[in-house]
Amino acid sequence: MASLLELRDITKSYNNTRVLAIPHLVLKQGAVYGIMGPNGAGKTTLLSIVALLLPPTSGTMYWEGANIATMDRNQLRRKVTLINQNPYLFNTTVEKNVSYGLKMRGIKREQRRERVKACLDLVGLPGFAKRMARELSGGEAQRVAIARALALDPQVLLLDEPTANVDRHGVEQIEIILRELKEKLGITIIVATHDVNQVHRLSDEVIYLFDGMISAAPLENLFQGRIVKKEKDLLLFDTGRIQVALPRERDSVSRIAIPPGDIIVSHNPISTSARNSFAGTIAHVIDEGDLVSLIVDVGEKLRVKITKRSFQEMQLNLGSPVYVTFKSSSIKTF
Amino acid sequence: MEYLWEGIQEAIRLIISVDNEVCRTVLLSLRISLTATLLASILGIPVGFLIGTREFFLKRPVITFFNTLLSLPTVVVGLFLYSLLSKRGPLGLLDLLFTPSAMVLGQFILAIPIIVALTISAIQALDPRVTWTAMTLGAGPVRTAMAVLSEARFALTGAVIAGFGRVIAEVGAAMMVGGNIKGYTRIMTTAIALETAKGEFAFALSLGFILLIVAFSVNILFHYFQGKRG
Image (cartoon, rainbow over all chains, first blue to last red; front, side, top):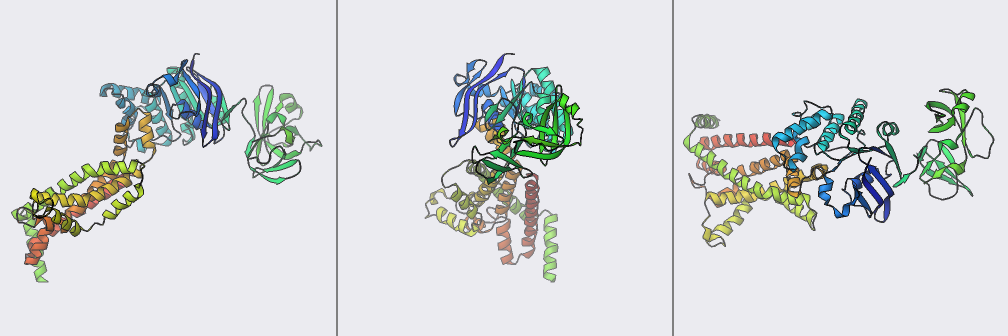
């Protein structure tokens, strides 16, 4: 697939605080990207920059290889459409909402009507043209917003948390629509979400954002909290549910991540130099081929990765009581 | 008591029989107030829109100023206009005093603050995503402004109706700059004041009924549109 949009050394700062730093990112024609990350990771900022709605503080963007600084921004903006988490629908009919952008482009009424019909069909809302936009459910409103964006025939469709305000049935429908759009129209779709399962269901490639930077692998077992005790070489970090011992490398920590591969599972407490040991029960088992992911509930839900062989040897099951142990030095702090 | 009862009966008879004098007074009232409201809307809505959407130095005091003008006494407007339009006044040459045009001008001044103040509040109460949505869909500055006004249409209609409600019922300015000349500048409110003083109770009462109906209708319409804005 050809490169459609390329970001080089893009940064965004507010009042000298850097909120985004992307050394290099290539978005290909017709691919679906998922952007994952916790709140405040920079997902919306990245989407707004890609949508050309927010100028980056520094860096260069290329559209089909050409520097966009040399191109007409307004023309380009028409090729990229961003749909907000909570899109605004004008207080009128669905048809007028979907055709608004077409009207702005001076397209004739007859053509507009046909295009609206085609787009409403694409999002599974045939016959909704004359309905009042304000009377729709969250999922339907989100689909009308998608139809309104599609009417403009964009090459890139950006969606910020498209299913955040939608019920479960609506979520499924929106995911089906996005997959169909990719197949039928071949447009590039970028979806920001913090739903792990959704991102894997939808995307060809997942971009993990953390503190404004792309991280190689997703940060798992990510917890927010605060330091409650400082000792000579140790910090005690409280997530609100469990207390975790950290090495005293820095004094202010607001988030920690515990790599699932660094956690040892055992039936009985083990005596090691590891500072953190918790008793819990297995709440969920996920088969991942050679590996098995366990979700162990120790107050917080910890994701633990072990080999399938150890899983079988230990005869673990849903609900089995286990101990999880990990070194304070394996914890990533932020 | 009998005097009141006879007055009411005569008033109803005047209304039902479509009395010439009553009709002429009502129509003139409506013509003057509607013209004043229309002119005030043409100026007031854009001014309110600009104040509501722009950030500028002294924005707060300007809004407070318009809110204060909401309680502008009608007699003071009459007095002010009278001094301007009288023969010796700076606009005396226009020869407008005691004409319907002077009354339109007076009511225009009374309606402007209401329409501006309610337009500002309508625009400020609007979802900020309207502007952003219109822009991302390719609207330029003018079309974006149109989208904002269109989204605020119910509240704006309410503003216009409230302006009309104020001027149709006012008597001070109309009396002072209109002069209450029969068949020329006599409107419902000034006629009621005069006819009551003259003892023509039934005639005043019939106009009073019609004015009440107009005021009620205006209020019902106002609340209908205010209710729709949500």
